[in-house]
Amino acid sequence: ESSKSLHLSCKSDETAEAAILKLASLVGYHPLQTLYGSGVWSTSSESSFYDDETGASGSASTADSAYGSTSLPLHTDMTYMTTPPGVQVFLMVQPASTPEAEATPKGQSTYLDGFAAAHQLFLENPEAFELLACTERIYRCLDDQEGWHMEAAGPVIETKSGGVNRWGPVSAIRHNDLDRLPDLPPYCSSLDVIDGSFYHKLTNAHEAWNEILSRDSMRLVIDLQPGDCVLVANQRCLHGRYAFESSAYPRVVMGCYVGTDELHSKM
Image (cartoon, rainbow, N blue to C red):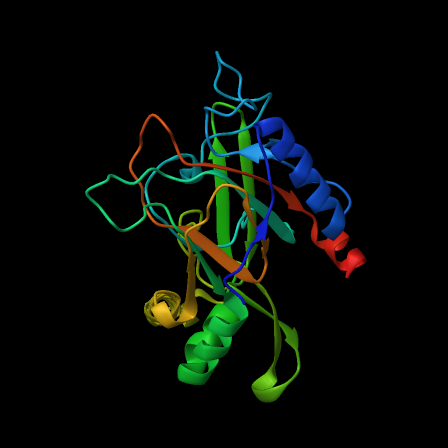
């Protein structure tokens, strides 16, 4: 049951936009304004949402790996925002084409429950869990062409206070290695207490986290077809994709973001 997605029948970008906006209104009120534009975005420059001459709509940014064809590791979106979106809506408009000689589809979407991964890390490596829960990491997004410079900080694993071993329930995941800056030492009143062991332990903790994210048993892989729609709880569920080959018929995904407060208001 978990592998099933909501199917929307869309004949064009215009009807796809209307369907996405309708779906967003069910879990929130209206799409968030982001650096990718106002309302609905598309990952392909072939979409009608993009200007023929500039390749972008308004001040929308395309300085993101989502607009390429390489694989994307599992991540949450907008880690460089103080409050990342609560929900992301994905609508597959056109899957990546697969060469006839290859039986395996290209560009499949991958998903993972970040709360389950955090729980697994706590069971296997409590020290790594503690480091990732109490160490703020810095994330940044720069787009010189459009003038964007966004930066925010937070732990990979955010928890509520209290609970067993002082850690309460996991409340949010903030993880994107493509946007994360080099780590700074923790704040201390004296630099004498900071040594290389901090970075060594943090690196090991992050590697333990990424190892769990890489397990096939933790992942859900879906070969989305045209009209398939997936809603992702962005501060809980990580998403990614397999690589695909660029062609005359590019992989096209459309979607939008819904704010966390709006999501909670509808729950």
